Structures are given as structure tokens and as C-alpha cells.
Length: 388
Ligand SMILES: Cc1ncc(COP(=O)(O)O)c(C=O)c1O
Image (cartoon, rainbow, N blue to C red; front, top):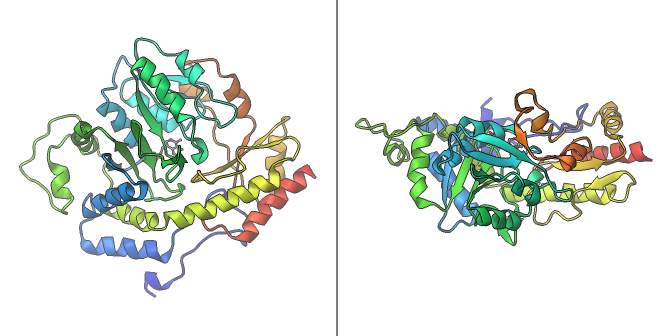
């Protein structure tokens, strides 16, 4: 049987468990993959360029540039390097974030400085970040947690006061809007992730979005071993043999094959996002008002939800997790705060009272694109029966 004739496997709730993540991979993705394989140019090429163009079109970018990479982590690494961040500098980001950012900051040679978050949207706390700004501070990396826009205008006001570069971690927020515009359409630099569990995936992948035309070429070189002029030819599925190497650089490019998966997914982004929004609003409607439970949002109209996060007060989170587990409902925890990890335990940081409280409350419930109704009901019944 041809691979395209088979029905793709979508593990769902009719199986024993409801997983936290289920990547949606349909026949359309398989078709894009086999077409890309047939071209015979597996590395970075015309499909990488097409994915970049589709990202720009989807976000509605004007005067801004997309540079795809092999992960969101590498996107941040080269975005910081292009901004001139390096040894002796400091970069501020919340401890309540994925460790990818802290590692990418360290990889530039700069020092990570961690700040606290706000209790309402779990985004960066500007006063806490400001308390850590000194002469060596170069950049600030705020996070749009779970796809929920953080108070980005306040972050930009802070950055302007101190002359800092803002690199927005939009890895959870592809398609979210802030102030009526999609995240990525204005401001300084953003980076996205298309890793296996994100709203759209390219298996692994990421991109930088920048308004700084003069930095694009540098991003291209950093992405591919410091080679000059390679991007233009590779985007035609060709290679230059008279190349020069003019800077440091890494193997961070996105291949045609991965990009083909990204292209297949971005075509369905609106459908995926709408379905996820509906699930989040259904969850919030069911859980809001339960004593001891805090929902992050009732409306998800401006959110492209990557995960659905709930806060469980009064130290009952672990019992809820066990209760759901016994009913076949998996849960996750976003995040273990980075300052609690061994390698970052002695990193510079502000007092983190909100982070310390929140990380013992948050639990991530299953959320999938095109999630079957029976899975949604199992999650809701599981939570409701715990608090009944
Ligand atoms: C908040 C955040 N930042 C950065 C990353 C890194 O992205 P990637 O996995 O594509 O390297 C992730 C990935 O999960 C993330 O959740």
C-alpha cells in the first residue's frame, strides 16, 4: 500500500489515555513530504524560502524579514548574536520560561539574569526586570506564555528607557495577537518555534522575525557556517563553489524536508488555532468558579493557544495530577523554573516570589488541534470529579 493511501494515525482518547500533546499530521503533510523528497534537494532550498514567505504572509509582515532555523533555540542564539550580544553582556529573561532561552543566552557568552513574572498573565514583571538592569545589560527576552500575550508595551517602554534590545520569545504564540496585530508584525525582534508539539510544526524548526534589514545577511551567515552568499543560491536548490567564510557560524539551517512539513501545517494554521481556542474556552467555562482553581483566561479570542494551563491553589496540584492519571488523563508542568535546575542554581536573579508560588500551582491539561469531543469531556470530567 502506498503511504498516501493509508489513514494517518492520530492517537486520541479512544485509546487508553488522553495525551498532553498530539501532533496533527494528516495526509496533506505526507503529500508535502513525499513531494519534497521527489525534488531530490533535501537540504536548505526553495521550500525553506517558501516556508519563510508563507510565515511572512500568514503574519502579515511589512518591512520585516523571516529567517528560518532548525529550532527555536538556535533562532534565539543567532538573534542575540546579530544584535551584538556577547561575552561581558547580560540578558534578562524570566526564570518561568523554558531553559532553551537560558542556554541560548549562555551560548553567546553573555550572562543570564532571571527576573520574576506577573501573577495575572504569567508574563515578565517589568519592575523585577528593571531591578536587575545595570551597565552590562544588553537585551531582554520576554515570553508570551502559553500563547497569551504578555504586557509587551510595558516591556518596550522599559527597554527604551535603558536602550535595550527586545527579543520576544514567541515560541508559544504563533498566530496570537497583541494590541490587535499578530505578534511578529511590529516591535523589535521575535523568534518562533515549530518543534514537534507546537501549534504548527516542521518536526523541528524555528525562525527569527526582524525589522533590521542590515542584520538579515548576518543572520544568514550565522545560520550556515559563516558562508557568504550561500542563501541566495540554495534558495534555488543550488550551491556556490566559490564561496568564502566571513564570520563565525553554525549548522542551524532549516532543510527543504522539514520546511515542507511546515508549509503543509501553516496552510491549516487558522483551522488548528480555531479548534484549540474553542477547547480552551470550553475548559475555562467548565473550571472558572471552582474554589481553589484559577483559569488564566476566559476568552482566547486573541490567543493562539499552545498549551492550556490551570492554576491549582492550596497545595492540591499533585493530588489532582494523580486523580487525572488514574482516569487516563495525562498532564504536564510548564515550567520547572530554571533557577531550580542544578546548572542554573547559582545564576544571577531577582527575588522570585511570584514564580516560586506559581510553579507549584500550574498544571498543563491535554490540548490538541482538532481534539475529539470525547477527549475534551474526559479532561473536564476528570477535573470536575476531583473537586466535586
Ligand atoms: C518558551 C520556549 N522558548 C524556547 C523554546 C525552544 O524552541 P525549540 O524547541 O524549537 O528549540 C521552547 C520550546 O519548547 C519554548 O517553549
